[in-house]
Image (cartoon, rainbow, N blue to C red):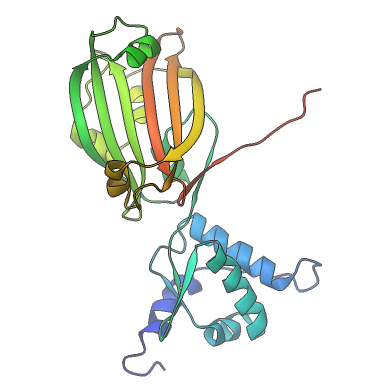
Length: 261
């Protein structure tokens, strides 16, 4: 029975007891690596959320039937990745997971939801503006013609992950801010009967401006990933141009590469 004031064991139980660890003691793969990988997957899929306590090394070693050095090495692996943190008098706590997004024509909202990351959105801007030259070229409209400009902050587990800027031709669909905060843009396009078919996309990296860093809860000058994408429907019409930035500390693009025959 936990002693009064002993919150670490009580907070640990619900988080860890919902997980099934499959540790193969006959495998050549070290037990610490098996444990670290399964804990990492649980964090990535939201089964262990930021703030969850794993307890201390003694608690974990008893819970999992492993030696304390094995548990210590597994925890240290994830501490070095920035997924866990050790807190004196509390134990080991989940910090956050890095979003790993596959490169395919899908929305960030859908990808985060599928990964159990609990996406949320704050609409910063939703207005009609004259199309700048780069936006006009991407959407195949005259420069200065009216387009819909969106700016949204995307969060997971209450923490900002990306700042999304999108431009769409006016009249394409009604973009209600409340709906944009409740779902993803691509899902709204599909609901409106617009079939996304293909996209051109460029990925890069740079340092965040002071304003971007403040919105993303980063230090000014922190590294961010960038993505520019023009999406086309099944008639070949450009329906959306996006210029997004992502926290490099929380986000990564996941590539699958094939050898050409």
